[in-house]
Structures are given as C-alpha cells and as structure tokens.
Amino acid sequence: MTAQIIKGKEVAQEIRTALKEEVSGLKENGLVPGLAVIIVGENPASLSYVRAKHKACGEIGIYSEIIEKDASITEEDLLSEIDALNENPDIHGILVQLPLPKHINEKAVINKISALKDVDGFHPVNVGNMLIGDDCYLPCTPDGIIELIKRSGEDISGKHAVVVGRSNIVGKPVAMLLLQENATVTVAHSRTKNMREITKQADILVAAVGKPNLIGAEDIKPGAIVIDVGVNRLESGKLAGDVDFESVKEVASYITPVPGGVGPMTITMLLRNTVEAAKKISK
Ligand code: NAP
Image 1 (cartoon, protein in one colour):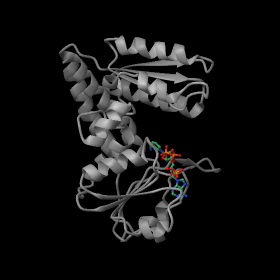
Image 2: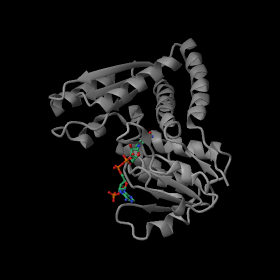
Image 3: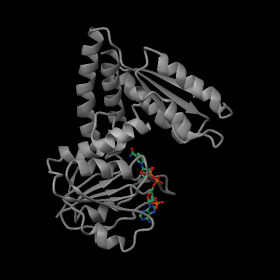
Image 4: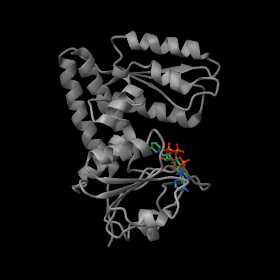
C-alpha cells in the first residue's frame, strides 16, 4: 500500500481563502481583526515564525503588529505591555512568542493575556474549557491536526489513536481533542515501555516528539493514518519529521509530509482564532 499524502499546505490555503473572504465581509461592516505578536530577544527561529505570522495576516487582511522587545526587558514591563494590549480595542488576538528569556516567568505572561484574546489557546481558562468541551480558543497545532484528519475523509470516532509526546502545546491537547472526537486515546512519552507494541496498535498515530525519523515502518499498523508533527533540522540543513516518511508511506493509508503537512495548518488556525476573537469581542 502506498499512503495518500495529506497535503497540509493545500488544506491551509483553502481555509485561508475562505478566511480572506470572511475578513473582507467583516471589514465592510467596520471590523478589522487585529493580532499583536510580542517577541522578546533575537532568537532567529522565533523571529522567522513571527514574520511568517505577520505575512500570513497581511495576506488575508488581518491587521497585525509585531512588538519587538529587548531580551533585557523585565517581567513587570512585559506584563504592562500585555495589559495595554488587553485594553486596546484594535487588537483582538495577543500572542507572546515562546520561548522567553530565563528571567521571565512564562506562566505569568500567559496568564496575563486576556483569555478572550488568547488566540494561541494557552491560557489556563482556554485549556480548562477545552478539557470540558466548552467554547474556547483551541491551541493551533492540535486544532490543525484534527482538521487535517477530518479533511482526509476518515472518521476519527471509535479509532485507536496513539499520540507520541505529551507536551502542553501539542501532545496533551491533541490527545484531548481526539478523545472529544470519540477516539480511544493512548499517550506515549519518553518513559513509555515497549513503545512499538503500542504504536503498532494505532489506527491514528500522531508523532510529536522532536526526534528525526524516530518512527519507522516497523512501528506502524498497516493502513494507519500517520500525522507527523516533528520539525527537526538535520545537519544537512534539510527538515525532517519524527516519522521516516519514505518507509512509513508504504505501510500507512494517509501520511503528512514534513515540510508541508502540519506546519502550514498551525498559522492558519491562528488566523482563524484571530477572526473568531474579533467577532466575539465586537459582539
Ligand atoms: P517537547 O515539549 O520537547 O515534547 C516532546 C515530547 O516527546 C515529550 O513529551 C517527551 O516525553 C516525548 N519524547 C521525547 N523522547 C521520546 C522518545 N524517545 N519516545 C517517546 N516520546 C519521547 O516538544 P513539542 O513542543 O511538543 O514539539 C514536538 C515536535 O513538534 C518538535 O519537533 C517541534 O518542533 C514540533 N512542533 C511543530 C509544530 C508545527 O506547527 N508543525 C508546532 C509545535 C511543535 P517526556 O514528556 O517524557 O519528556
């Protein structure tokens, strides 16, 4: 069997085209969705993510601001900056690019963002609402993963989903969303024993680890849907996922590539959350 490739880039483009139309309609009614992205310090990867978000906003008509702060900013000053954005009526979504310098408490920063403007879905109020299935902003990467699986046309309900990785931004929330879609969910992590025995049971396998080619064909149940979240820069400069794409695509039924799979969906879900935030706040 050769798997069908889930083309995240194309799905993301479809959603962005629809969002662009929606934003244009909102603008006709005087509402311009606005996103503020705060970046602290000069981490090159963070800078490139922030610029990509800014560009994506521009392409669909969302107003966006990048607020660059020196790495020496105090936590207090950063919190005041967030307070001002919480009060700013032109800004509907606020995002602080992580990681932050060590002297700043990330939790305090996330907690400071108004839950209504937390378009990353990291605020404990949104995380709690996600857990109980209430209205909230979903974290972008997990939301994008669910969207990709659904758009493959396959039903999630009743399937055994195995998530490898349990971070707060990917592994745990995607496990929770799969559960809400009525999958039976197993979460594996660095202390899991006999991981292959577990991954081989997966009808849906989500790999969110950060180790290039950790998952090979021998770890996969034939016909599984394989979602590769990993983004790993190899010494050659090339990007690789957590899944050995070439061998796994011969066993799986669907597979996401890296790049061009989950990655483009993350920013797209951020755009969608920002549009939703504008609508909610202006009500
Ligand atoms: P993270 O916070 O480092 O978490 C990695 C998880 O993998 C941890 O739960 C860890 O277990 C687990 N793990 C480590 N080694 C393992 C092993 N040998 N077997 C099984 N589990 C293992 O990473 P993250 O933020 O979730 O990101 C994961 C990957 O996704 C990274 O490559 C990241 O770049 C990528 N990512 C991509 C996007 C996107 O938009 N495409 C977005 C976010 C992240 P413990 O908890 O036991 O330590």
